Image (cartoon, rainbow, N blue to C red; front, side):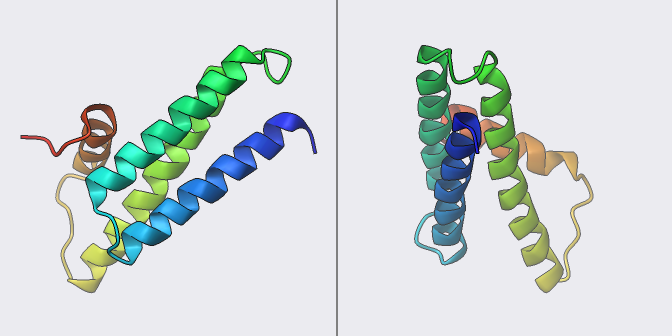
Length: 108
């Protein structure tokens, strides 16, 4: 295992732990998105400041963001199925998570 794999794996484990807290109701959507943003940006900054680890820190940031978003979207999809509701606009989930991730609050 190389350094970047270890960093990615560790960050994904922390994101999974945040997601478990979200699933249990300990944190809401905004807290999940804000916590993951802090982790992802910190990981990107660390890797960027240590260029010997990887020449492309933005790729790691993208991978971690998509991992967090997909965990969140999958749980929202499962909850919608449990309530027998289907989203008529599946792109809204991406918009919703992206907005909270960037702004730290729910969209208007």
